Image (cartoon, rainbow, N blue to C red; front, side, top):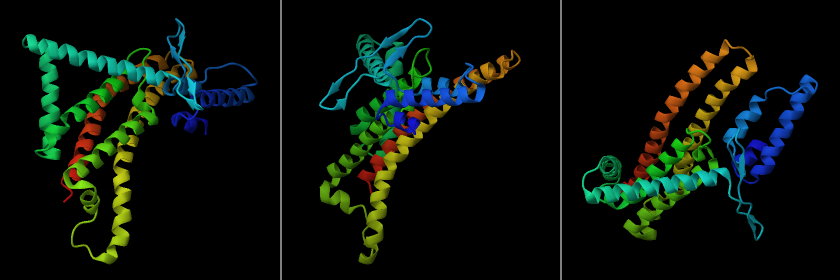
Length: 294
């Protein structure tokens, strides 16, 4: 229950403290109060959100606690990482634009390749001739998710896309774009009229309309869960493999655990690109389904 509260961000501090207390109590009861390595606590400490930036063993940086009108607007580690990703994205975009103006540069060429890839391989094939209008949104989504994924692989970083609140917000934006694209093309009445194909008998409307409404909500929900589960799962596997070293307490396990963890880490680098691509591709596909319902 504490893990669910932390993942939904209702009270990350309370969830973290509760999980730590429960694990410590259980461990003490089992081992007579002796302090041993706690793999569960180590994993939760790395994947859950917190109110500080941890630079162990150098120290910690507390983050501002903000409460306004009963709302908890505190800056957490994942919020800080999203800011870092946004700053890095804006910096790269500005540098690429300036280099491109002065002449062909490597950074400008890479940026141009990414823009053309999103436009020619995702937007136009999935949305049609309207696709070029959605390139700025799709490009921003792709790069932001990619930068957030990569930040989870650097030392002292955190994968914000392993937080279900972050992926839910991204999915909510995608849902908004899906509906607005259909409304922009057909109007409010026309867009929702296309939920049910033309020529369907009236008696089937009772079944078709609820099914289509559920499908409308299920699309962004699938985007949310897919990105969250893939990014969090990879980090759990890496931390579990490293935790085996301390659990087994044998030097024989070190090369095996480190070797597998290194392999998974390299695989996570590939997954960071793949998940950014899949989220953007499915978003463009769902927008295309709104623009071309039949």
